[in-house]
Amino acid sequence: MPDSRSTPGTVRAALVQQRWTGDKDSMIANAVAHIQTAASQGAHVVCLQELFYGPYFCQVQDADYYSYTEQIPDGPTTQLMCELASQHGIVLVVPMYEEEQPGVYYNTAAVIDADGRYLGKHRKNHIPQVKGFWEKFYFRPGNLGYPVFDTAVGRIGVYICYERHFPEGWRALGLAGARIVFNPSATSRGLSQYLWRLEQPAAAVANEYFVGALNRVGVEPLGDNDFYGQSYFADPRGQVVGDAASDTDDEVVVRDLDMAVLSEVRDLWAFYRDRRPETYDSLVTP
Image (cartoon, rainbow, N blue to C red; front, side, top):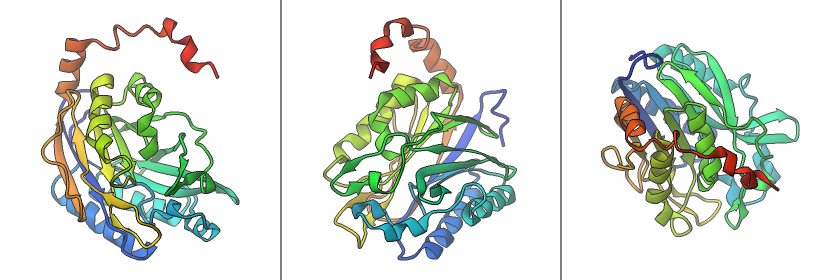
């Protein structure tokens, strides 16, 4: 694995998009198999989809789905993923439904280093409440800001689904030194598909890092949302790295990300040099 904390190199990164299998245990088993596939292809870092082990239950408002919560990092799925990361020597980004305490739940992604150490978590800050995406019923807004994690593949960040519509968090992750930002999502045809190939490449350009855009696939029993997959990586020039994934099937997207491009783009465009934060006060005025 490249020591990308200190030198540019190539990071082989993977995204795992899945269809709902019908139960939590088989979703986890399926994800484990996909992680093993990515590891066998030499992946250094793997990201799973939003709320990866469940259906996208936010299509309805039903308290029964609170049962999908787990503690992070002490819950069984985080512990399993720590073992898996250590076994394969890979960094894992694992989105789950987190219980902080009874009745207090978050849409969260755990980040685990390649030696199996739990590094921390991102809690989704921006929570939608529109038809088919009733997330305020299930989640409190995140309270951990926009953390960036020092991993074996360098500094990475996480921005979850609906958050991609808000440019401020993208920039916060870049200012904190993120080299790759993962955006695990559950997004469906019609409502936002035309934005899927627009927003994340634009964020990669504006903030001069790689973005991993990850979506689930299929129509689930809880509603008519048709999740269209098409997971991909965008480079800091806004170009998709290789092809996007299928729009209907499970797939593991494995791509080589050339970290040297980061310095090239930052020297060419110098967006961070030319920022004018002293003029931005009104942006944070309630």
